[in-house]
Amino acid sequence: MTPHLPLPTQTTEEKFLRQIFVRDQMAEWSKHPLVMERADGVFYWDVTGKRYYDAISGIYTASVGHNNRRVIEAIKKQLDTLHFSPPMHGTNPIAVQLANLLAEVAPDDLSTVKFECGGSEVTEAAIKLARQYHRLTGNPGKYKIISRYQSWHGSTMGSLAASGLKSRKTVNEPLPAGFVKVFPPTCYRCPFGKSYPDCGITCATIVDSVIDMEDPSTVAAIMVEPIGHTGGVIDPPEEYLRILREICDRHNILLIFDEIITGVGRTGQMFAAQTFGVTPDVICTGKGLSGGYIPLSAMICRKGIAEAFWGPIEKNPGFVEGHTWEGGPVACAGGIAIIHEILERDLCRNSREQGARLRSGFERISQKYGIIGDIRGKGLFQAIEFVSDLKTKAQFPAKPGFGVRVGKRALEQGLLCRFDPHWIAFGPALTVTAEQIDEMVAILDKCIGETLAE
Ligand SMILES: Cc1ncc(COP(=O)(O)O)c(C=O)c1O
Image 1 (cartoon, rainbow, N blue to C red):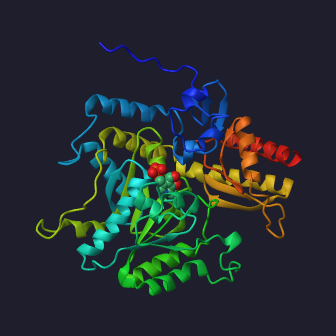
Image 2 (image 1 turned 90 degrees about the vertical axis):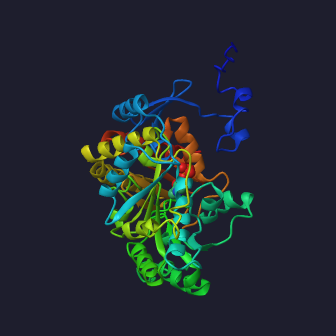
Image 3 (image 1 turned 30 degrees about the horizontal axis):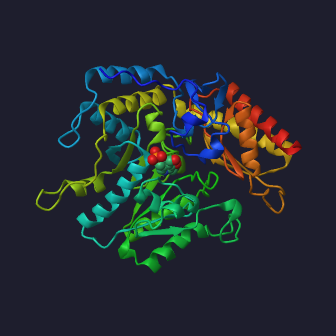
């Protein structure tokens, strides 16, 4: 028998950390490595025993909190019954049940589901769905995907090509062709130099001109996050998504909402589509649907689109897209438990209520220090943007950036939030309490004060 290889016990030592790629710049990260050991509710504990408030649900993923017993028991029970079903030849009852549950909670006639394991897989599946749908309905020339600068749709080559972050794209170029970018609705710093509401919502209406320039007969879909994350929580003016919907209808273009972050209660309704009152043709949802327990994501499309894939076998190959782990019964059992938890505990309401409390907390900090130029987002997905001058909107020096300095200090003081040079975002579990929101905001307040005094 092969003896067990020894596992490192001091997992924060550099010689052991050198054996793993992390998402951060590794040499820098290994100076103060964050290595988590356990979690419960809205808290993490690292391997040294230090406790952290988790103000971003891991990364907008632990929707119903860490160590949620209902989800864990559902997963354990499923493991004892059927841990894997054959994805090439069929499905399993748990996947069918979750698909039906999602059809119930999704807006309007979005009712056919493709399961995947993560956000990148599911946004890429939506791109393929749009292209194949147009082929099946007599428009094989429609293949281009319009998306936005500063957006993030995933790490695989297709989803990366749809993304608009040069910091993550350039190093991987050249990327697949057929992706066109437009400017995002960053009202606070309008890319067209205008001001809302007299701007005519140029960020949306100009998409019509872009389609015209590209040739509408070549455009398959527009893909947007209803509220963009990268770029600093880009919350569009209320007309924006409605205008995109109208443009898509006029040109026979599918509207895809990437709700990997905004889905499953985060903006105060089950989907941001409902928060904004705009129905897309496809919703991609991920992070919060899995709760962080077992990888799970889902693409939900409208009935009419799904019907195009039901043709006779001689003419129609079905949806040509698939992954080994899609619709796994264990992941789907977790997903069902999460949706039930959200519905029964009315966590969408909690998202709205605690979101309002979070907004008040951010506003208090803003009045206290005079360095927060904008507060954006909805429900439990909100950010603050730092400026050195409220009038001119001038930013603090980018390196290392005021937001990074505050965020790192917050980590030292036991608060995990999302930080960039110029902004900080919160997205705690939908189960968060008023007291916990106040405590997270209090740590942030202290860290901003200390960073300013540095
Ligand atoms: C809006 C959005 N779409 C897609 C993705 C990709 O998801 P994943 O990392 O699960 O592949 C992310 C991940 O951060 C995201 O935020």
